[in-house]
Image 1 (cartoon, chains in turn cyan, red):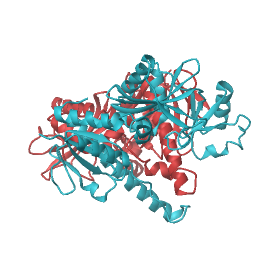
Image 2 (cartoon, rainbow over the protein chains, first blue to last red):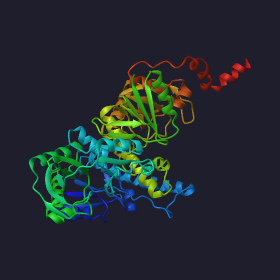
Image 3 (spheres, one colour):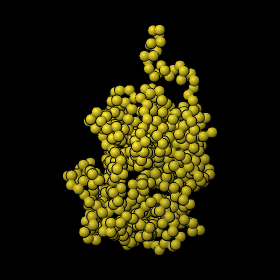
Image 4 (cartoon, chains in turn green, cyan):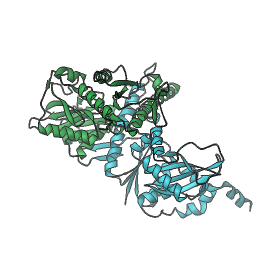
Amino acid sequence: VTPTVGILGRATDPHAAAVARRVVDRGAEAVMIDTALPSFARWRWTDGQLHDHEGEPVRLDAVYVRSVAAPVPRHATPEVTGPALTRWIGEAERRRRTQVHARTVHAGLEAAGTFVVNSVDSTWFHRSKPAADLRLRAAGIATPRCMVTDDPAAVRRFVATVGETVRKPIAGGGACVEVDPEALSDDDLAGLVSAPTLFQERIRGDDLRIYLVDGEIVAAAHIRTTALDYRGHEDDVVAIEPDAELVDLCRRVARTLGLVFTGIDVKRASDGRLTVLDTNPSPMFLGIEHRTDQPIGDRLAARLVAAGAGGSRG
Amino acid sequence: VGEVVLVVEGEDPGAVLLAAAFRRHGWQVRLLDLRFGRPTLDGVDEPPTVWIDGRPTRPDAVVNRTATSRLGLAAGSALARQLPATWSARHLAAREEQGLLLACFDLWERTSRVYNPVRTLDRRLLRPAVEAELRAAKLPIGPPREAAGRDGICWIVDGTVVSAATRPGVGKRWSTARLSPETTETVRQVAEIADMRLGQIDLWQPRADPAGTIVTGWRPIPWFRSFWEQTGTDVAALVVAAIVGGPPAAAPSFLAADLEPNLLDHRNLVRRRRT
C-alpha cells in the first residue's frame, strides 16, 4: 500500500511544498492540508476518522506539521478605536478559532496514532522562546541568562548583573538587537509599557545551525557573519562535521523539548563552550540546504515515508 | 504559611471567593490581574523567579483563570486589554504578553502546583480531539438528550470530587447532591483524560435511567458564586481545602449568621420584616 503523508500548512509555503515534492519523489502520496483556505474550516473528525472539506474520509500514515498560522486581521486604518476595535477583535477571534481548528486536526491525528512531526506538545515553544530556554536550562543545558519584562527597573538590574545584553521578541519573528547600557532610563525604556520584551545576556562566538531528524543530525553549518543576528546577514554558510559534544548537546535539546524535526542555533565560544540560543519546532531549511548541499528536506521526507510505510510512530 | 498566585484577566467573582478561602487558611494571596500589570520573569539564576508588582514570588500553588493558550493567536480578551491604539501594535503586544505568560506558567509547572496548566485549557479548546479520547475510553460523553432528565454539576480537585449539585431543569435552582460511586469514577476518569486538576464537570441524568448519567462538558475555570448563592455551599472553600490539604476553614461568623441567609433567599428577609 502506498503510504500517504499529510502536510499541514500552506500550499504557498516553499518549505511545505518542498517536503510534499520529496515525499512524492519517494513513491508516496502527499496530501496538502492547506490551513489558509476557507474550505479548511470544513475538515472534520467524525467517528474517529478525519474527513476533508467534501466529507470524504482521509487516511494519513504520517504528517508533517509545517505551520498552522493564520494571518492577523488588518484594518483599513492603522488605529482601531470604538466600534472598529470591537470588529477587529471579533475578526481576530475568528482567526484564532481557525488556528485552534488546525491544532484540533493536529491533535486528533496524533491521538489516532499517526506519526506526526512535531507533536502538539512540542510545537508551541516558538510562541515563547524563554519557556524553551528555561526548560533546557532545567535539564542542565546552557542557555543565556534572561529577563522577560516590561519593567525598566528590572532591565537595569539585569544589565548591571550580566553586562552585555541583547533584546529580542519573546515569540520570535524579529531581529535581535544590542541594548545600549547608556540608554536605560525610564524615558529610554518607555516603549516597554506597550509590550514585554526578552532580554538576554549576549553570548559571543561562532554561529552554528544544526538540524536533527529523529535524533540524527542531518545537517550542520557554521554561519559566518559579523552581525549580531545572522539572519539576512550571512557572509558565508559552511557545512561542518559536528563533534561528539555538539551531537550530544543537540540530541539532548531535541529530546528535552520532544522534537522529531528541529533546527537548533548554537553559539560556540572561543573556549569551546556551547550555548543553545534557539530551538525551532518548524525550521526553515531550504537556504541552508542550498548553500551547504546537505539533504535536510530529503531526510525529513524519507523519515515521514518510512514511518508511513511501517505504520510506526517515532 | 503557603503562598498562592491567582492569575485573572477580568472581573472574576470565582477568583475572589478562592482568594477569600485561601486567606482563611492563612495563605498569602498574590493577585496578578493582567488588566493592570504583567509579571516579570527573572531568568538570571536557577531556578528562575517570577516577580509580581515588583516583588519576587515563589508560590506553593498557582490558580490560572486566564485564556492563555499555546495553540494560536492571543484571545480577544488579551487583545482588548493592550494599550497601543493600532491593530498591529495591539496584536504584537498580546503576542508578546502571551509568550511571557506561557514561560511563567511553564516554570510554575516545574516549581509549584498549577490549577490548571495552560495545556489543560488548550485541551478544552481541542474538545473534539479530547472527546474522541473519552469515547475511546468508553466514557459516556455527549450532549444532553431530549428525554426528561436533570442537570448535574460537580467540582473536582486532584481527582477527588469535592462537591456536586443538581437542578431539575434550565432556569431552576441548584441544590447540593451526592454522586453515585459509578458517576464519581466516571468524573475522575474524565478529569484525568482532560488533564484537569481543578475544574467543573457538567452532567446530565435521564429520569428514566438514573444509572445512565452522561458527561456533557468540562470547564477548567470553574464557576462558584451562583451555586453558593443557591445551595448555601461555599464550593470555593471546599476546593481550597482540597488544595491546601485540610478541612475547610470556617467562614467569618458574621457572614454565616447574618448576611448569608439574606443573600441566599431574599424572601427570608421580607418574611422577617413582616413578623
